[in-house]
Every structure is written in structure tokens, then in C-alpha cells.
Image (cartoon, rainbow, N blue to C red; front, side, top):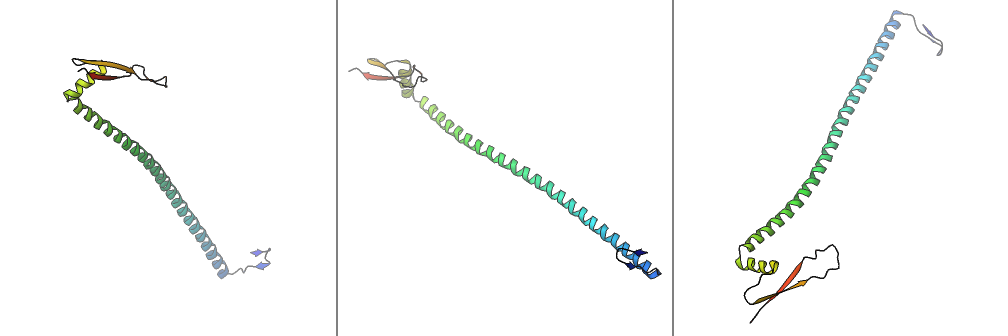
Length: 141
């Protein structure tokens, strides 16, 4: 076995053949180890990519849920304000004097000897209701 490019002749002995076979075996093991290491590295890379993708999706979902929570909290605050206002309205409607005053102002009722003067509100906005009126009442002496 002669290698002409290096001009080095290989010895044709049993020992040389044995060492050459061992060298080839070591080279095959080295290539096998490198390929196994590359496969392990590639497997780890795929696992980390999948885990990273899942973490990214979870973060996106968490941000969306946080936005929904903020919206829900804002809506809850508005609903609580509305409930407080409605509770106050219920308390006022239980007061007979308030109900009588409300009926007089809304339906132009008057007490004995009282006169009602409707005053139309002047509006510059055309979309405002023209039915809105305020009343002024005075008690006759």
C-alpha cells in the first residue's frame, strides 16, 4: 500500500496492518461520538426551542388575561358606582317629600296655591332634547 501523494510508503507488516486497523477503528469511533454528540445537541436544541415557544405563548396569553383583568376591574368600578347611585336613588324614592317634589317638577303638578312656570333650556347643540324643561315654583301667600 503506497500513498503516492505523500511519497511515503506504508510498511506491509502484520504490526503495521494491525495498527492501521486500530487507527481506522478509532477514527470510526471518533466519527460515531461526534455524530452522537451532534444528535444530542440537536435534540437539546429542539427541546429548548419547543419550551421557548411554549413560554412565549404563555407570556402572550398572560398579557392578554392581564388586559382583560384591567378591563374587568374598570367595568367593576363603574358598576359599583352605578349600584351606589341606584342605592341612593332608592333611598330618595322612599322619602315622600322627595317623591312629591319630583312629581311636581316632572309632571307639572302643584300644591294648593302654588304656580308652576316651565322654562325651556336654550341649547346650542342641535342633538340635545328639546323636551327638557326646568320648573320654578313659588308659593302664593
